[in-house]
Length: 297
Image 1 (cartoon, helix red, strand yellow):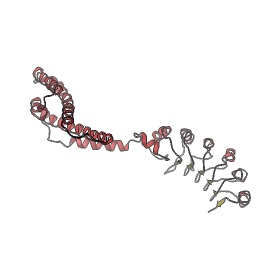
Image 2 (cartoon, rainbow, N blue to C red):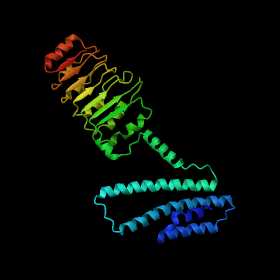
Image 3 (cartoon, rainbow, N blue to C red):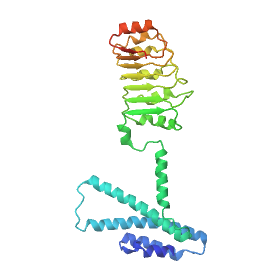
Image 4 (tube, helix red, strand yellow):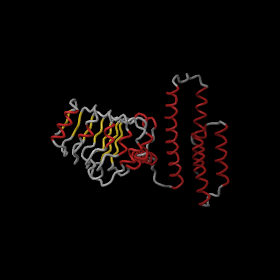
């Protein structure tokens, strides 16, 4: 019954050799199968479903060949034609799923639910949206800002994919809620090839107690934000970061910074609100770097 419905449908109206061969295979299955045997019938129906997918594609190819010789003007823009072909492919795939659902209804006598393929497609698209893995290489190349939110449940997947990015100029490492540990060295190691100009390691008071050594690898860094951590001192390598224009150390228990800060002669702005930097240090820094704006509030 299932095969008769299929062969009497529009699928049976073309006479191309490819379509005829597929129809012949389907007819052979119908004649050779013991349909009273449930196991044999299941195998046969599965094969018929596979052949129906092939039949859909064969008919599309046949129709395309007929149209190409019908005198219709060719598409001038190759890109437009590729877009049209992609749309046609998607329509074919959905129609195939719809047809298979119809066959299942006929075969199993189940409820007439033709919307199932559409629901499954929507469900898969939602599932894809939740997947943090990267699927578009062009998007990777165009990104210039990357935020690593350590509060995210799947943040490790994002960290693993960091080397795939090529043009990140701003890297933000933070958390929405307190966390005890952070993979800062691993994150910065994965970012070592970035043309980084701005680095923000912020809002990690339980996890960050020092400036990571890996920060020194970013020679083009113009801005470094380290506010709201638990940093007690600046490392020696900060002296060599001569391209640094903006440095924010706000909300850290830090002091005794003048000896290292004054070596950064190009510094334009220094944030030290809610730190332990003394007025004497501030005066010393201001004297050494008169063009630097020091923010204490």
